[in-house]
Length: 276
Length: 270
Image 1 (cartoon, chains in turn red, blue):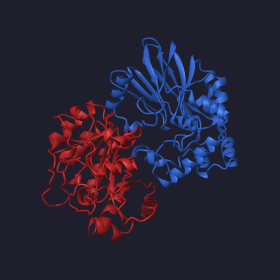
Image 2 (cartoon, one colour):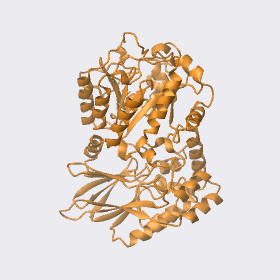
Image 3 (cartoon, one colour):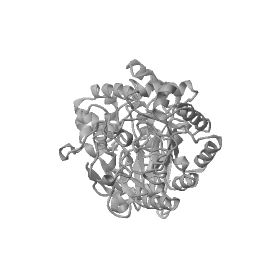
Image 4 (spheres, chains in turn yellow, brown):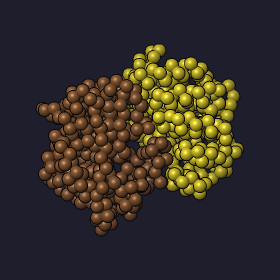
């Protein structure tokens, strides 16, 4: 896949360290020993500086659960001083003090701070069957806390087999019923990666790379950084087959291979992990 | 994508963003510009969509000698694409976008579609001593949104470097803003005159840029008050969605909200 320009930098800040262990997790994150290590804060700052110099448009913190990183607030502040920044969280650690800290960062930043809170089903028991007991209530509480501070979180759901029809509209209705006046919802497809390895997807052959393909494949304008270096996209961060060559981000802004069945899902759906 | 270069330098130009078939606001803006001593008028594309009677816009632009570039909507209409290419995921937004696009496609004459197809993608000009690039979304993508809160200085510098310009003018997002880099180069989103900018008033905006020797570039965002009630009545009579009409009357966006960053979304009512 030819590389166009660096729109999004994904920072795998906690590696695969998470306090939940969702059934469909794209990188099999969980509370036990992470197979992909969290990143030292100084590395994160170095990658962000390089991405900014390369004209990056947006920075995303992901994991794992980014709020487990003990430096996360200063790291988000560092990013937000330089570019629009998004934090992907399961919401479980967004208590009142954390919501205050995030809102304070957003209030003094010139760029937008977006918080994405993951929740996969509008019914608590069906959501928790995927994400773990209590995950629904804690995610919705996080959405309320952030919304109350004007942060307008984006509820982000994966279209699991349990989702049923009209997931977008049902999640929007859930937010409205919860008193969220400006509901924001993002739906992602199910990727055959991590705990869903072997469930669908497919390769992308050279013949499939027509003129439209670059617009459908986010690796044409994104890179992920993780403890192991630079990777083609956030879904495949940490996988040896998605590791980009070189020691710098600049060296990684070259054509990449499409080595994984998840690439087929991107190609088919044109889905992007970005906010919009 | 073709780039058309203006042969002469300008001192003052007026620049219109998306018109969205709002011939009422276009007429009012052109009347206002007539008294502003502008050397030329430019329009950055998206002539149709949202409003009624798209065929009324092109004659007004041609009559006033407006130099137009192609927006993503114009490109889609010219080529008869299936949709406008805005890429919404909200089913509500997609429904509204489909209604608007089908209406516009059906009511744009084949002559105007040929005219839209022939529009350049970019224009270059000299404004005083500055080299300027005019584009629709961004210099690198016709449908890229450049919002104030999601366009970092590093990206602006990168786009200006790539364009070999000191000034970039764009539209597409629907809300005006200006970014001046520490080195004196600028990016200006000129806003749109097709619909209000989600600020609770029905007025719309165009941009006047003036280069005086030895002085900073003057960028004036000019409000345009027009007969928005007449527009609203025409839209209702044409059967366009009531949500669109509400926006014209109240100034608040009611649809296509998902593309707004959190910062800009927080300022609106919905």
